[in-house]
Amino acid sequence: MANRGRATFAKRQKEIARQERAREKAAKRVERETTKPKIDREAVDVDPDIAGIVPGPQPLPYDLPDEVLPPEPETEAEADEK
Image (cartoon, rainbow, N blue to C red; front, side, top):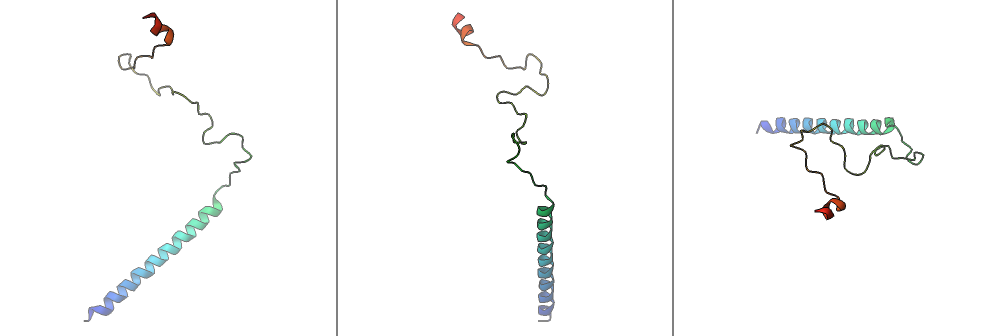
């Protein structure tokens, strides 16, 4: 029965440490929000996240040997000739 006091004390210390960590996280969250740069998306014509992106197939970032390249698709004119 002597361990009851010690277990309760340790539990209380863990709870205090948990609350302190939660307070620190909340303070960091508020600080991050106040120091975060504000971007006015209404004033910008082009969304900076997608600026310069071209739709369609993208070029390969490196050169592949000819035997590894996929065959080029045939056009309708080439298909009619066959």
